[in-house]
Image 1 (cartoon, rainbow, N blue to C red):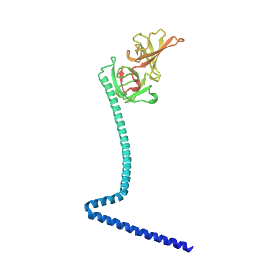
Image 2 (cartoon, helix red, strand yellow):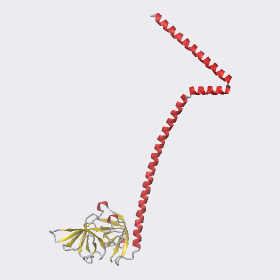
Image 3 (cartoon, rainbow, N blue to C red):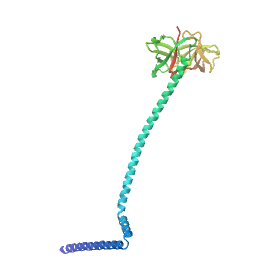
Image 4 (cartoon, rainbow, N blue to C red):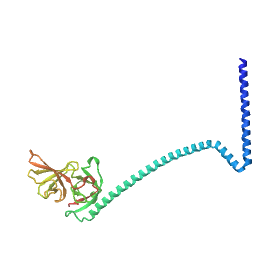
Length: 283
């Protein structure tokens, strides 16, 4: 057992000596060649030697440089994406802001147009009037009532007719407070307006249905009222002056078992988007 171990140890020592000897010879040969090249052509040899050394050593820093460039590129890409998202959010907010301002400008232009119309009116059907602005509306009673910014202080009274800026019927004052009033719209089911068709002289009662259409009742079965006819307040009405436009007939409803004919009417006033109204002073 002792002999094989001694042989192996000696063999390893021999190999180590041989490796050291060969390394020394290689270094010596390399040094001699380098000196020879320098003596023969100093400048060219030095440049060649530098190129040789650079070619041996350069792959390591080149790889590190490429790795560094790759890492920087990835970092720049992440930063660019981050700032692009931030800029995108900012632009979206900017667009929303401009859209809101544009909508507000359109509303102001519409209100100004309505006010100019009212300023050009000296009277409506021979009656003086009070201009008012819609200030409140309940979504639960959208087609039933609105509140305006004029009340007892402005001389308003219950029962006064209310028109839009185009002088179409809107409704009637049903409640008056100090600085505001409540208006019952003609689209409310509690509303009832005696109307007449100027073309046929037929009278009927227009009631609301809590939606965008009105219901015309009590027309005779032989009535000649047809779609496209205009309905205005009747002379026989005790609540409204005659001749105020109410709406246009859009459909006739005839029932064989009933001696009366009904119809559907589209109001001229845009009841779902009122901003300014005219309140007649009947006193």
